Length: 387
Length: 231
Image (cartoon, rainbow over all chains, first blue to last red; front, side, top):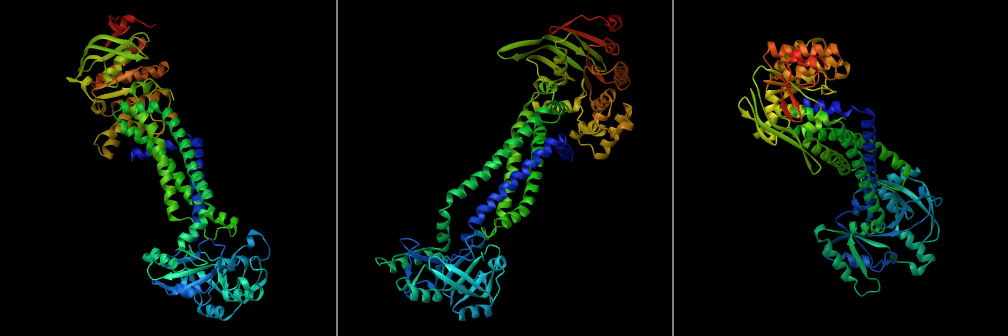
C-alpha cells in the first residue's frame, strides 16, 4: 500500500515532465494501434476467405480468362460440391474519383450467394435478382455509401468491356459480421456474356475465375491438384489455390508497403521507449539521495528498484490505456476520412493486446536500467548526491 | 555498546587508493553521547558511516552489542540498520512526497506492527518532538528546524539502540540548532539513547558527554567541550 502510494505520489512530482511523457505515450500507442489497424485492413479480404472455397484461374496470369465449359468438368472432380464463376468487370461509376470506385463482378447468379454464406440475403430479393437479367445485388456498405436502394438503376461505363451498362438493384446483401466486406456489386455473368457475344464474339464464353466449393477444407491441396491435373496440357491450364492464398497473392504485390507500415509502427515504440527511458533515468538520478536514505533506513535494493520500475510501469500503463482508448475514435475518424479505401477498418482485439504489451514492455525496460543503478548505488555515495 | 578495534578505511580514486581512516580503536559505552569532531576530510563522517553500518571498513572489527557488523552481508546489514540504528542527516533527507506522519512511519513499515500500532507510535514520536499539530504537513511546508525534528522522530521511531547524527545542526539557525540539541540531550538523558554525532559546531559539542577528535584519519587528544569555547 505504502509502496503504491510512494509510486503514485512520485509520478507527478514533475508535472510537466510526466504529462509530456504521458502525452508522448498516448500518441505512440495510438499511432501503433492505427498503423496495425491499417495493416489488418489490408488483409481484410483474405480474412473473410473461406477454407472451403478454392479459386481456379488461368495458370499464366489472372488477366487471361478460362473457358466457361471448364465449369462442368470441375464439378466432376472428387471433393467438389459446387462451382460458380466470377468475372472482374472494372466499370466506372460516375467518374474516376476514388470515392466512386467500387468493384463489380459478373457472377453465376444461380449459386454464387450459396457459396458465400457470409453475405446475408433476403430470399425475395435474391429471387428477384435471379429473375432479372440486368439485376444486381449490392453490398450494405456500398448501398449506404451511394444511397443505392432496390429498384435503382446504376449506370456503369465499361472499360474492359466497352459500352454503357445499366444494372438494376434487386437486393442489398448484409454482412455476417464486421470482417465481411460488402462494398461490391454482383450482376449476372450471363448478361455480360450475352453482350460480349453480340459485340465481341471471340471474347465470349469465358470467365475470370471459377469459385469451387469443396466438402472438406482439409483436402484443399488435394482437390486443387486434381482440378489442375484435369486441365494440364490444355490451351488454358489452371492454377487452383485456396481463396485465402488467392487473396494474399494480391496483397503480396503491396507487401513492401505493408512491411514498411509494420516497421514504422515498431519504430514509434522504440522512440517512445527512448523517451520514457530518458525520463526514468533523469528521475532516478535526481532521487539518488532519497533512494540512499531509504536504503540507510533498512529498505532493500529490491524495494528501491521496484519503486523506479513501478513508477515507469504506472506511467506507461496509464499512457497505454489512454492511447488504447483514443485508438477507437481515431480509427473511426480515419475510416471516415479514407472513404471506401478500407472497407473493413476495425481495431482488432489482437491490436489492443499488442498495444498493451508494448506499453508494458516499454514500462519494464525503461525502468530497468535506472532501477538497477539505484539499487546498486552505495548508500554513502547516494547520500552525497545532490539531485 | 560499540567497540571499534584497529579500523581502517580507504577509498579508491581512479587507480589510486586514498586512505581515510588509520587504525582507529574506540569504545562507545551504552548511553554515551559522543561528538566526533575534526576538520574537513579528517574521516569523521566515514567513521560515523562505519558505525551506522552504511559503509564497510577495509580492516578491523566493529562490534555493536557484541556483533561484528563488518561481517554482515548487505541484506543482513540492511536488517540490522533497520533494527538498531536511527539516522539524522544534515539536510534532513525526508521524502518530499510524504507528509510528516508518513515520513516518521517509514522505518516501521519494515516491522510487523499493525497499522494501529504504527499510528500510535508515530503520534507519540511526533508529540515528543513537538510536532503533533504538523503531522499532515509535507517537508516543504515545514521550517528547517521542524524538518529536522521530523527526522529525529523518524530516527527514534523504531526504538534503535544507537542514533547517528551527521551535522544535525549544520543547516539550521542558532535558535533551531539549540532546540535540536536540546532534543538530542533529552533522548540521551531521559531515554538512554546512545548518540554518535558528527559536528563542526562547538555549541553542539557542549551537548555531548564526550568528544573525540579526528585529524587526517587518526584519533587525537581532544580538548574538553567546556574548555574548547567557540570558534
